[in-house]
Amino acid sequence: MQFSNQPVLRESDGAFQRGLNGLLETHFKLSGTSNGTFDGEIQRSYISPKLRLADIAFSPHFTCLKAGKPNRHRTSYLVSHQIEGTSRVTQGGRESDIHPGEIFFIDTTRPFQIETDNIRTRSIYLDTAFWRDTFPERDQYTATALGPETTFGRACATMFDEIFDMPWMLDDTAMLRIGESMAGLIAVAMISRPPLCGSEPDVSTIDLIRSAVRRNLSDPELSCACIAEEVGLSMRQVHAHFSGTGTTLMRFAMAERLARVARDLENPALADHPVSAIAFEWGFNEAAHFSRRFKTRYGLPPAQYRARALSLPVKLKH
Image 1: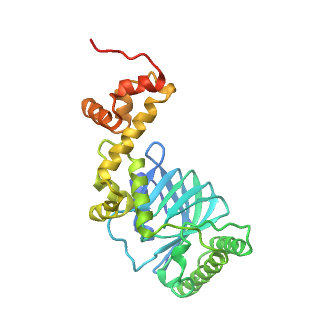
Image 2: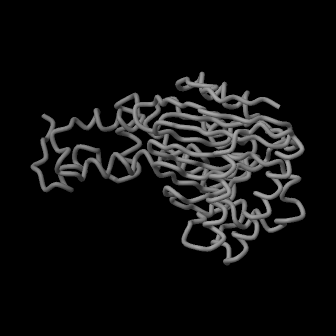
Image 3: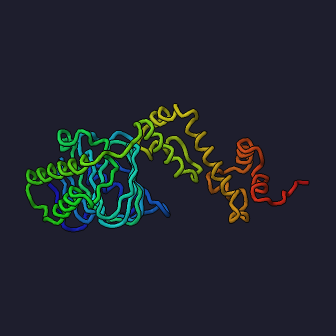
């Protein structure tokens, strides 16, 4: 058992990601959502083979599953109690906004997304064995908000508070029984109402891939390898999932980039922005290549497209 009453980790960006993954045996990729940087602090922690507890504060950031195969034999589920700030969590075709006082859980071995503002959260990482018998339908309830407005929701929040307010000096056997009790209470609370409608696994994974592409359109180095890393899949898996959509991953990315440029060209507030600057903001790095692609897609060169959209006089070349 490892226990600490002092902050056990206070770092930024990659250093925090490495520290968190090492301490909690997670397989997460974290990145800032605004200027690309973020800060994190694990204020308290309890670490044992099948149960991990962490009181964590973050600046705005995005978390997803890293590429490669996570350890499916340890700490498969994250149960999180939001103390401050808000988060948006996605898994299995379900998406929920999580507010202070609400609880959610995810399977940390399957693709997921968590996007936050400034938050503080109390997290319990539970081994799969805790859920096996008590919550067989758990995968239908991941990324579902559990609030204090129900009796069982209040009971879960109260138990969270009690667990995190205690000194964590019990022996491992007692702590494991606390983990079992938490898992059982979460199971009862979740199944007391119907699950949110989710998508089929392949559909939800494709949605995750598309979302990752859209988040990274401004990166001129965007590639299948980058997307695979962000969604926690191999390149082969990404191509396999996307193959049934009628297009390729990079053609989809190109269409999304061109659509963003077209939208900005139609925006009167951006009328003074050079076309090339808008194109570069959306990941194009060569003006002639961009113009050819745009004309092929929309039937007009970008300057003429803007002029027609904004009813501007067309500057003819002499």
